Image 1 (tube, rainbow, N blue to C red):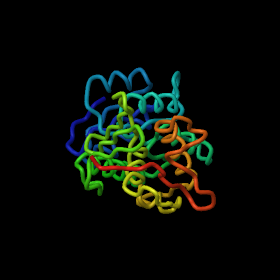
Image 2 (image 1 turned 60 degrees about the horizontal axis):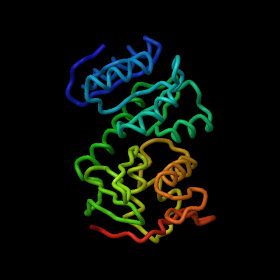
Image 3 (image 1 turned 30 degrees about the horizontal axis):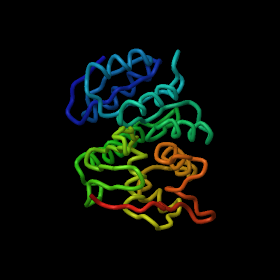
Image 4 (image 1 turned 90 degrees about the horizontal axis):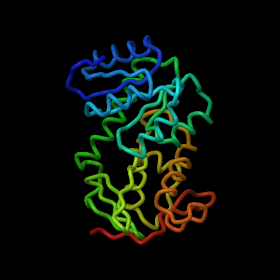
Length: 242
């Protein structure tokens, strides 16, 4: 199923047709173009055939589950993901965020909340894409990395490109703009997400962990992104604009 509209293209991935139809109907009324898929195979087919601005992804899917699909998406693309699930405890939310989801909504959900979450994620993504994310410089260098905020690319010294989720991108940009400054979890929440939705503090720890796995030679003994016990985190690398 595909519907045409102008506000953006959303792909809804859920094995329950009633959920797909419900979410699609809500999005169409808000002016979005909507495509739907029942599983990972159909999702990949849709991604090959069209440009998608955001994916609404169910956690519990037949075959490959939403966590596996989200992890694969993060390895291949920066398309933002809003995850839907019937599981609502903190462990499941943190696990979904750790796999790269940009936001998380528990079933049953309200239509207005879903639309608000989607709009918030798209707003952050588009702000980054158009260069309005607050950074005056577009290229930053630290350790062995080159970080280009205009193209959302992170390149190693040997020119290998790493994919960053929207959340990882926002977090890294906050740190390179504020090197050698200790930032608390609350500050990081405010700077990266603006508290647009209810969010759990451990999500910052999760994103820090994911970012370390990408930029640190030894994530278990970080030298770039350090923990300041009792206070927060500090970006300890020397940063230059170039």
